[in-house]
Amino acid sequence: MKATVGTWLKRLAAGMALLVALALGLVVAGLAFRAWDALRAPPLEAWHTVVPDEPEAEAIDAMDWVAYLRREGQLIADVRREVFRAPEDGAALPVDRYVTGSPVDPATFATDWNRSYVMEPEGSPVGAAVFLHGLTDAPYSLRHLAAVYRDRGFVAIGIRLPGHGTVPAGLTKVEWEDWMAATRLAVREAVRRAGSGKRLHVVGFSNGGALAVKYALDAVADGSLPKPDRLILLSPMIGLTAFARYAGLAGLPAFFPAFARAAWLDVLPEFNPFKYNSFPVNAARQAYQVTQEVQDRINQAAADGSIAALPPIHTFQSVADFTVSTRAIVTGLYARLPANGSELTLFDLNRAIGLGPLLDRSMDTIVGRLLPPAPRAFRTTLVTNADPSTLEAVERAVESGATEEAVTPTGLSFPPTAFSLSHVALPFPVTDPLYGSQPGPGERFGINLGALTPRGERGVLIVSLDALVRISSNPFYPYIERRVIEGIDRPLR
Image (tube, rainbow, N blue to C red):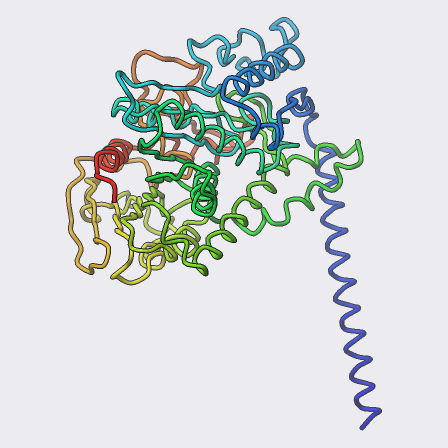
């Protein structure tokens, strides 16, 4: 018997050793592939290697708004001096964000929306609103909703989060705590300008949505932080794909100078004046850490009951989202909320487009799989086709605590060529001059990315077709704006 046990233990030890060896072999093979991929990748440009001297969290917490703007202006000036090239030096693209005077040079526009901004209402403010943009993004992305708040009497603060609005290399060193410190600074300034005792709303897009939730949870636990009365979230980054957890491993070869390209998941031309196209490994790692912090804080608040003190949250989310997990928004956030007037609005697939066998069959039942059975503690609204034969869109709403569905026309329609919305589209109307499919008159930013409909052979373009096929503006933006205004005008709980 002892011999049998000993034999099994030896076999078990041998099996474990084999598994460890296989795991190490896979890691080594993966790192070798990353190193090889780095060697064959395009060379890094100055905007991938020059890292602006951003203030860190402790320094930001000690700053006021004027000091932050002064430092921001210095960062942008440093980038123009150290990174920008003159037109005669040549450029890889005729449209290059980092060529002085190019059509997408942010300095050539009436407003550089890479910078933090304040929108003041006429007369005395009735409240304050803070706007937190997404990863690789700029304050530009929420300017339309900021104008809505300004027109309703709020002072609107849109802050440039550290690492953004300058060069992609700014995201190679930034940490998520720096973003949280900037969020606290923006709230302090918004409350100062509006005056004490006024309403406070926080609006977050993508990664900014995670920061908004984290701030609200922190304010519940810390009485020194001004507490929001309402959160508005667009495509919030409550959960990410599993790859982000291990993104740090992908950057390990970059410790050797020859493999510096391994610190980047994407190295692309920079033709967007208000968003980076290149994406460093550290950005994915920091985004994942933010989502983990948010989940930990939600779990803690649910366990001790303090989650009941959260303000109402209204989230707008496409059921099809390649960047964030729509399921995590439901299971990781909304399933934990009390019945406090929160709402989840989902934008369905275009069921009338007739893609037939080209559509992923799992998408047929995606809404039913995302939502728990009614009644729910939060109001749910689904913007979807009135029926599968028409592009006309309706709102299907189920009130908190109810089971019956109310159907209301929206007066809007799905585009005949779009099969869904996307992660990036929600905050932009179709008239947006940069991302809109039908850019309106007036402003121009050197390029329009929303109206492009290229067709041709693979390998010709300098960007992937995926980037161009992805819808970049929201045909239902007027619906979002109307619902946001309803939340602004609704009396406090």
